[in-house]
Image 1 (tube, rainbow, N blue to C red):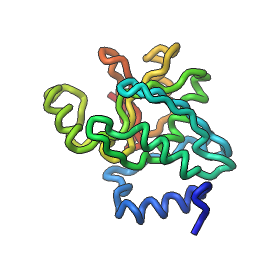
Image 2: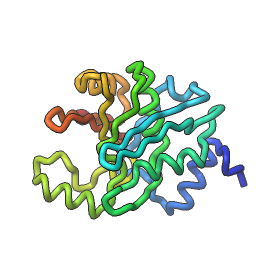
Image 3: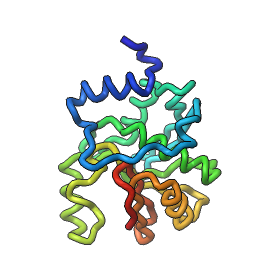
Amino acid sequence: MPSLERLSRRNFLGISAAAAAGAFLPSTPAAAAPAAVSTAADRSLSFFHTHTSERLTTAYCTAGEYVAAELTGINHLLRDFRVDEIKPIDPQLLDLLYELTTRLGADQPFHVISGYRSPQTNAMLHERGGAHSGVATHSLHMEGKAIDIRVPGIRLEHLRDTAKALRVGGVGYYPESNFVHVDTGRVRYW
């Protein structure tokens, strides 16, 4: 059994898949991580959760291996705070965020509006906002494969355009709510 301190990507995904009993099986084909991410041995991210005021700066990947304890911390911060439910976050989503912060040259944390959403929370948000709320009935947030973010000091349009230029997953633009949605599903824009 691999050390809990450091797991290779392959071991982490294998263990996660077994533990989650298929929870990571995509409903749509997932895009590959950006080429620049796959060569980066050490990857760090910083987060500020806008609803809970929690902060986290983490070196989630060291020497090309995901760090289990750091992933656990990310899963906790990105939990559905409304029902205090945790789901593993897709490491490809973290790599997408790492590539975004690198390309943006950002020195501020990602401000998280929404990470994982339980089915109950997703249904409540969908009903509250109606058909045009932007909350999908089968949202990738419920799979730990989506996040809604903004970055202080970065124009929202620039964040959106940089995410689209990666050509990895979906990118949604919500200027009226001041956030950009990114996910690891199929490439699409709205």
